[in-house]
Each structure stands twice: as C-alpha cells, then as structure tokens.
Length: 155
Length: 207
Image (cartoon, rainbow over all chains, first blue to last red; front, side, top):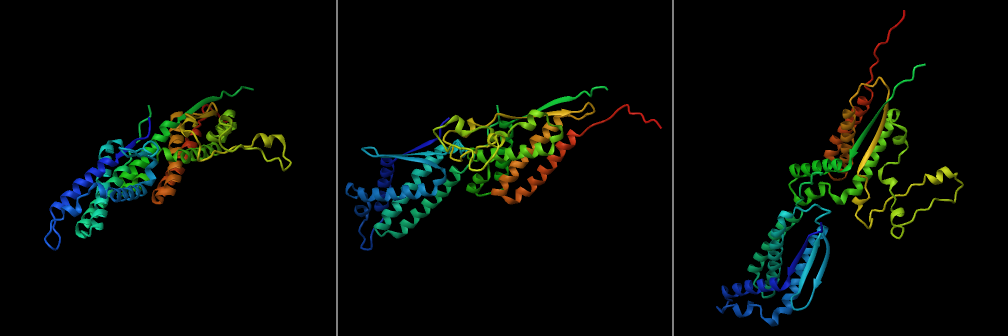
C-alpha cells in the first residue's frame, strides 16, 4: 500500500480561471458603461501574472495542509502540474473522500486566482465573493483531508 | 516430602489486537466528542503514534511484571520488554547512532552487558516491521490455584490498552485521561486478583 498522490494540472486550473474571468467580464460594465470583458478576460499576455497568482494560491493551500503533505513534486513544461503525496497511510486518511478532495482543491485554487485577478483589476466586490468561495472550499478541504478512516480490524 | 505440583500457564497478548483496540477507542472518542475535524484527527491514534504506543506498552509490561512478579516464570521475569530488546544498530549499522557502553567509569562486565540501546524517532524504515507481534507472559501457579487464565489475560489486555490510552489522552485530551487512569488501575488490580485465586482443600486441623 502506498501513500495517495494528488495530481493538479496547472493547465486545467488556468483554463478554468480563463473561463470564470470571461464570465465576470461579460456580465460587468465599468462606471462609464463600458463592458469589462476586454479588461477581465485573461489573455496570453496576462498569463505570466496569473501564473504568479496561481503559484501564490498553491503556496497558501499547501501551507494550510502542511501537516498532511509528505512531499511535493512540480513538473514544468508544456503541461505543468504539481503532484502532492499525502500522508494517507500514517494518518489513516479516509480514502472515500479522495475524489471530493481533488475537486475542492481545484475549486479553491481557481477561486484564489480569480480573487487576486479581480482585485488587480479593481473589481473588489467580486473579488470578495471569490475570497469567500476560497475560504469555504478550504474548510471543506481541511475537513476532508483530516477525516480519519476507522481502524482496520486485525486479520 | 511430597513435591508440590505447579501449574504452568501462558498468556499471549497479540499486538495487532491491542493496537486495534487503542486505535478504535481513540478514534471513536474523537468522532463522538469533538466537532472540529483537525482536532478529531489529532486526537485519534494512528501509525504516526506507533512509537509512542510501543513505548507505553513497554511501561505497561514493566508495571505488570512488577505487580505480578511472584507468579511469573523465570523466562518472563528475565526477558527484556519489547522494543528495548530490538536494536536499530544490530539491524542497520549504517543508519542511526551507534551506542557504545560508557567505559569512562569503572563498571563490571555485567553492567556493560546490560547496556540498553534506545530507538530514534526518525527511524528510517517502517517501524511496524520492528515491533513484536505478541507479548508473552509465562505464569507459574501453585497447585492450589483455581483461577481462570482467561480472566488474567483479559485483565492484562485491558490494562495495557487503558495504560496506553491514559498516556495518549494525557497528551491530547486530558479530560479523558483521568477516566482511563482509573480503568488501568482497576484492570491491573483485576489481573493480580485473578492470579491470586487459590483455594486449599482437604486441610484438617488437629486440636
């Protein structure tokens, strides 16, 4: 039996951020009545900055789950990803929650990036919304990853 | 003179059963009495606490040996308790510190031989592989002993369980520790009482 690993595709998270930012831009207009799509949509030119936001989000999430993470491996290249090995054996993690954990992690990371992106673009009200999404996702993640399975009966 | 017939009994406590009970109780208590999931996880024993559990199993065995010395057989009395008998150095000379007896003071050979090594917390290989699978207690009872060895075994098992949980909860949930300490004291007394169940038949008094 081996410790569980979580693979986070940064490309997928970035893609989700692009989609959410586009929706935010489409539905908003600035004080002069101009649609904000052009401003909020994440373009290839914005990606280095959004990449920084994603790195910060990853750091923040890892910091909060530090007690459960054994090691982190980052892969660069055309499909960048991070692989977290969690201390599932030592801490008897309840593996039933694994799929939910991965989903919540992706949501939390996307929300954190969007909060930073919207703050950067001075859309504070929506940024606050994404901060609250991030916090509620982090609560779910923390509860999930700290759920201990029943001990196994001796054979 | 008629030779007294001794009764030899052995109690075997299996480690996996004992650790299962410890894990299950701490897990159940954590789930039932704590809402916060992080605190729940820290309150319940797991593999991370293996060394802690093993050391307190050692203490429990030592206490049992002290309290029941009169009826233990020679092998059990002489045996070193669990982990102290296993040395990391013997198995892995390249890993971990090597313990040498302190020869700076004049000591006799017996003391040198009795030098015990201790384990490192950062043991490089899974600790579970090193633990004993069971703990043996050999008893020598007199021919008058009418007790039930299962009662002795049950009391010893429960004492070891409660002793470890006392120490564990003293660390993580002190309000539970007091309860387990009371249980541990009671079970040790039960073990001693069960081992003292002697009855003498056929005694006639000449007046």
